[in-house]
Amino acid sequence: MKPTVAGHTTASGHGSAGGLLRKGTIGPLAEVDAGSAPRHGAGTGLFSIGTIATLRQLESSFPNASFTAYLDDATVAAPPGMLGKVCEATSRAMRVLSIETNEDKTDVLNKGGPVDMPAEYIWPFARVMDAGIANDPESELITQFVQLKAEETDRLFRAIVELLFAKHTQWRLPSVPALPRVTFFLRTHAPVHTRAAAEWFDDRVTGVLGIIMDGPVTKRARDIAALPVRRGGCGLRRQGEIAELAYLCLGEKGKQRALTDELDAKHQSDLYETLQGPDRKVFVSNTAAGAGRLLTDPQVHADDKGFSTYLRERILMRVLPEGQKCVCGANASNGHVHKCTRLQQNLRTTRHDMINMTFANGLRLCGFQCGMEPRLTEASRRRPDILIVGLDTYAITDVTVTYAGRVTAYVSEESMEEADPLRAARDRPTQKRQKYRHWALANGLDFEPFVMLTNGAIHSASRRWLRRILGNQDHRLTITNAYDLIVADTLAAMLRGNVRVFGAACGRAGPGQTPRVGECPGDSSGIVNLVLSREVNKSHRGQKTRTRKQRHTHTNSPSTESSENCTNERKAMQR
Image 1 (cartoon, rainbow, N blue to C red):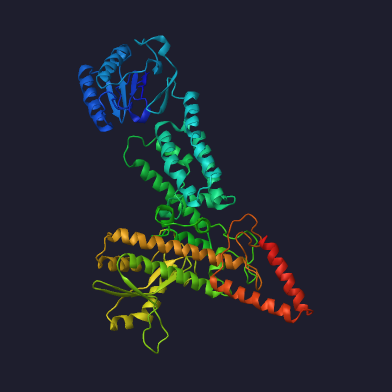
Image 2 (cartoon, helix red, strand yellow):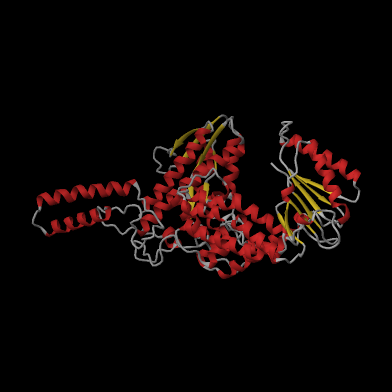
């Protein structure tokens, strides 16, 4: 790769690329961008060692010059009358490492005074270590450079929209390659040059968020998404706010993190004050341990329906379309769907069974033997969910899933800091212990209920119990890896169960009519894909059989016309 040489002249103390020019020893700046030495076959590490040794020799030869190495870049700052001499010495030293300078890419920034470099190399703007630097600190050329570099990420945003990525992949793409690059420009340029680029980037991120959720994003939802995951958000920070802080904190370790955390706490508190009822409870519960695992743990393999449903609930947007009614006739808000007593209970039972089976399979992978729903006694109808047997391990658990916005005992007004993220599930462990602990102690079993919220949060006692159980078994995984494996798969199973519950809530199909994917009444945009449980499908197949029998035995009865109409409507829906 051909090196790049750039010269820069500026006053003492003037900020520039990456904070390299904040030390006061400022003069024309020379940068050499080089790869590994081709003739010597040196690797990156060997090249770096050779570059550092060479620059130290140059520093001893030119005490008035400043040399800085960063990966494969070497930057030189020297007084105006020495720039040409220092650059020539640097080029000779680099040739020893088999690096040739590219004269066509030599730029000189001349703020004033003579510079011993050819006039054709003098420019009002140059790129030094991927940062834009100009003679005038407020030059429009810097703003244009930052905007151009930010818009290079537009290829990524277009790919997210146009290519058939899974929603989980669409979610992770902006944060992995794009955000670090934008953050670099925010830290190396003054806010006056980065505001427009930051706002453009924020608009693109909001657009991608809308694509993932198959609908427009409200301001409140975007405010929540901008919070870090540990504060109940999604980690999609607004770069416009960061632009005002990053440059001011350059060179001061920990200052930007402290100021950003203070800003996040204020936004979180302001949002908390505007929320009421179940929304406030869900917002608080999203700060619990494990509630944001889907957004941070790549082991959680969620399908598109599960991820979209989870994300909508997290940013307090309706999962079902606006105006959609539940099967009971009430407004199908997120809170109502989770708490509706008229919704078919076997769907929640199916979700519970899916979680049980996945949890038990994870334990089996770690070497345990698991029995499902063992009887306490011959006469008792109580059955805890899973019996776990391993080396020196005899344990039992009962799994329970609770809606994160469930109303518990009345609590007086409290601040965000005082709110309990797991309040909706606090009484669940006590109820389960009263039910099974006496029997477990009598049989020498380690019992603890496994309590989860619908957002993925896990009760602290359940987390400690699972780690303790895994620590007693001789398996090839570490305790942390085994724990993450089991919890990730269990969370994915719960998300699939949540999709079933929402699908049943909006499915107004009569007997024999099972909604297909995307056929939810009022859901023409395909926001929610419906999947009903096997039990419901079995009952529908039985109804179809009865309808056929009625058609043969009562050919002229009114019920025949009704059955034929239902059949025709069902065929139309399937087409």
